[in-house]
Image (cartoon, rainbow, N blue to C red; front, top):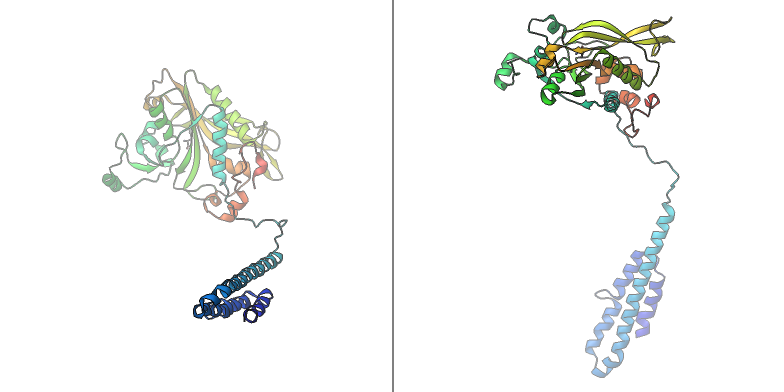
Length: 372
Ligand code: PHE
């Protein structure tokens, strides 16, 4: 009886070809009404003596079959895994799939470069609000109410009614506006930190103007030095050092021209010499050389006495110089972009072309060649 019910089953288990076939064999032997379960049940009807002899045998049979099923199951699973591993080979020499990667906008890149250059010259970075009041943007900078310079700035004013509700007015009750230049940061920095002072203030400025070289929002960086005995020579050296470092050319030549800004006296417009190479302007060399020219680059001058006083300082003790330059313009000149509007369109194709890798550090010493 024992041989009949187990040996054929054992043989079948050992050559079960699939997990499904093996499961069927398990149900047929060890299942609720399987052959071995039925065999175990016969123990109940046996005499004590018979059970004593057959009991251990029947249990041994059940263990043998159960072990055989477990072993076969492991073997089938192992074979399935081996087969799958053989099928799913990985070619580790294939290049990884490229992931889309963001890039640094040229304006951010140039601002970082400016901060780096001026940090070496001992300048800290200062900031001020873009929603500014009339006093900081104009009056404190020696541009009183009726001054024609106010009209020149194409200012975006906030409606008077908005102000009454918001209650946000300048120290002298001035109207709120979008700052037209970064120069109000001169006043705020002097009032906040006193003197001596060496800051640059990069940021957004706004003017109601729009064409290929003007956008209603653009970027400037302001520079301000306040100390004792500061003169035009310091301004010239600082601008020369800055522009040579920024354009990464030793042959940058500057031309200082008398000019007018209400907040500087004397005021100096700074031009940079360029050569025409294949119809393109390439900075470097004197603009007076044959085939060369001068390009207007920035406004600057010695900080006016009334401006120093508006900053809470005594103009008999403290002198200084200031300059303001368009960041977008610097970026266009250095990296060869010709339409300012593209800077603010947010077209990712433009960014992919002109943007900078966030992993190229340090930015400056990476050089002009890193423009993508
Ligand atoms: N604020 C001036 C402008 O926007 C530039 C400037 C700054 C001139 C500082 C002189 C000194 O045109």
